[in-house]
Amino acid sequence: MCLAIPALVTRLECDKAQVDFGEGVLRDVNVTLVDVKVGDYVLVHAGYAIQTVDKEDALETLSLWKEILAAEKDPGS
Amino acid sequence: MAEKLRFRDPELAKEIVQKITLVTPKNEHVKFCHVCGTHEWTITHYGLRSLLPQNVEVIAGPGCPVCIVPAAEIDEAVKLAQKGVVITCFGDVLRVPGSRMSLLEAKAEGSDVRVVYSVSDAVEMAKHEKNKEFVFSAVGFETTAPSTAVEALGKPPANFSFLVSHRLIPPAMELLLGVGDLNIEGFIAPGHVSAIIGMKPYELFPRVYRMPTVVAGFEPIDVLMGIYMLLKQRAEGIARLENEYSRVVKWEGNPKALEVMEQAFAVTSGNWRGIGRLPDSALKLRDELLDYDAREKYGVHIEQGKDILLGCECHLVIIGKIKPNECPMFMKACTPAKPIGACMVSSEGTCRVWSKTIEAQRVS
Image 1: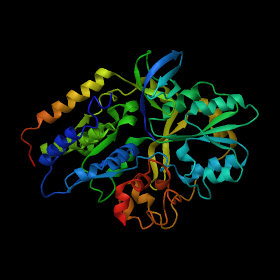
Image 2 (image 1 turned 45 degrees about the horizontal axis):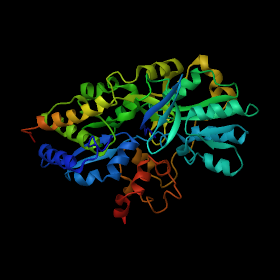
Image 3 (image 1 turned 135 degrees about the vertical axis):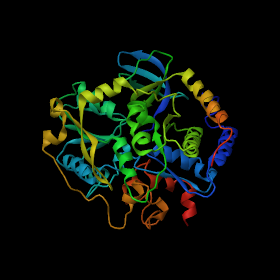
Image 4 (image 1 turned 60 degrees about the vertical axis):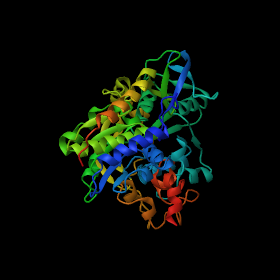
């Protein structure tokens, strides 16, 4: 139930935003809990944006994975 | 975006699995625990357990907020529905067994029970149908509680109130450490609860319990990476708190969400189905919002309910003590079409997740 889905903010009006979940699925969500602007990605749970997802953060995940995998040269067991 | 960023890349998965094999001890059994229905879904759906060395086990803890709502709190909703109050709830809550009946059964008998996508939809309904009383069954962990808080603080109409059944995850994790012979050696902490609460509430696990803890996301690579990070800590003989899901989870969580939760709720003890009463594990509306507390407004306080039916082993599945296929009723008397226990009802219940996959086929 803690499922949250990333969506693109396409329109913003006070505490409400229209977001695009992809493939034409649009919905109004409440954005009280986050600071967003049109064009941002947010994580939506039960009609509320609960966090922003920054593309650079997502890219950083990739480098984090690389870093963690590269750090492992001589594991103990 | 997901594909481009390799969140499901089989080659990367292979690379991580190789690393996992390298850091896994040869002759010891290692058991990690996650506490999130969505993690169980990812693990089961993508068959991740089959990729792990045989001596690495990942079990599911109490990660389904619907499964752990005690029967007494469903009974309260059913009672209100039967008195003519419109009950609004998330779809998963509809079939959760109460002591005598579920909300779906109450609806079948003529009560007005409505499924909503969001608490704000329920508030809108109340605004448009002023001649009726509305109650929202507020179920969920920290991921969901902020939305309830925003609506409670936003002056909902007088014909609207909440039956708050929110629960908090860290106390349940702490409980698992006290369960004899569970022998967990690390936690995969839930990504979307952590998007709200941040990292700090998990600090006690490595510090006090020497328990490696990794907050992980929900793509298959996220979960494999989380398992690898735990194994690596174990191999190095250290216990620390790490964040694999940094693209969503910040150290401080979501401060705005935490602030509205703090304004709307007080922390209290709460019953968990199959577990019992846990201190500081539940939320209730603060005194200044008592007008919106359905229990106060209608005087419904049911303390005891029938949580587990005879023969059902949900209480053991919920704490990861047994796997769904070790319950004699799994996919026999208890199926998604005719669920007996709460773990088979919710789409994030461990039994329900298993029923949908190849692992269910292996049972027979």
